[in-house]
Image 1 (cartoon, rainbow, N blue to C red):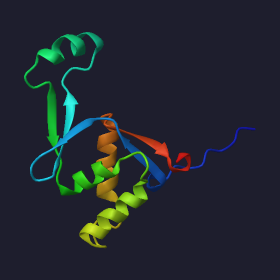
Image 2 (cartoon, rainbow, N blue to C red):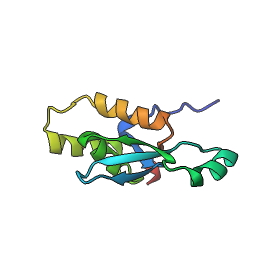
Image 3 (tube, helix red, strand yellow):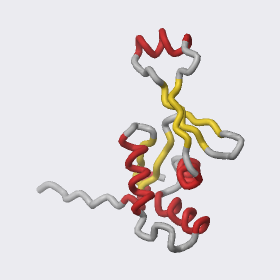
Length: 118
């Protein structure tokens, strides 16, 4: 008999950054996505390009979330940091956080580990 898988709760997952980033003078994070990642184009074109990366500038919330995706902090803790910074009524159902993390994950900019693996 096959064992049932326990449902995954986003709040228990631990996100980890994969993408490189840099900070601007305001402290906001800019995500650096390589324009070419394939083995041929990446090796040949990237070193010769003036702007080898597409930059995505994060707002204050995105910056806090990105910095918290350190591979050891679970989503529940990240949510708590947001509530501490912006007040208890900031996204009490975690919708904005879940959508943002989904966007990062679907682009391959973060990966998740199970919180039990820490």
